[in-house]
Image (cartoon, rainbow, N blue to C red; front, side, top):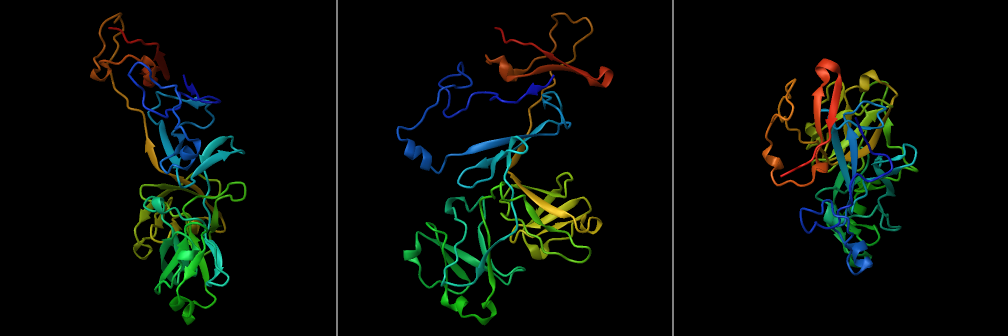
Length: 339
């Protein structure tokens, strides 16, 4: 038995806590009096769940499968997922290479992707010079361009309203920076209609410079692959300078710069590397072994589950008998809670 998830919600959308335990899940939509206020609230979020650990081609998901797990990501102030029309499912939005703005200048001003100050702890934002980096700049947000001043060397101001950048006179007059390109590591991911997640091509031999943009925030896992192979487990290291070479079948990336190294690079020359977005966590269903059913048990007590005391909604649980080692089958049971 599998749970078919096509074309419908598995349960009602929860926009407010239920008033009591007998109305689960809540079906009432509770909205603020002002739709405008609801649209601009910074605590608004939407989530995407991704089923993993299942065999390819299944129409649904096997609840009894011990490998079943759920990856999740979120849109809040930062855009991380949308609908993939080609795959016909919701999926994380792709990343890409560092965003190049142009040569360092205040006239004309360079315009960077918008910065979300409240999201900086979960989604870093970086402005730097050169690729490979010559200098990383401290980003100082201001409300708008009317608040621009003369920032000290190594600092760039950014307008929260427009994304315009303002470099200090010390940096603009530095001969080492003349004509140097300015790059940004953004917070929000890219539009999949014009971006395929390509972050570079592995070389025939030697070293290479490849970066994740956006840089995954704390606790986030990048979805990276080479060609159309499976995703590669990527380990985060705080500093690029101390990041070791990865083992075969793995990848390492630096939290301070987003640089990524693939252990399989020597084996896959001239293959394209992809960054398909991030997931923010992983969870799985809690399973309890109630007991063993004897061959002629009838109504004999099989087990006691204290967690069910006081429960009224059996639809929140799946009961099954797993005889897979013997017969290769799993039986799902119709259950009801009674006094």
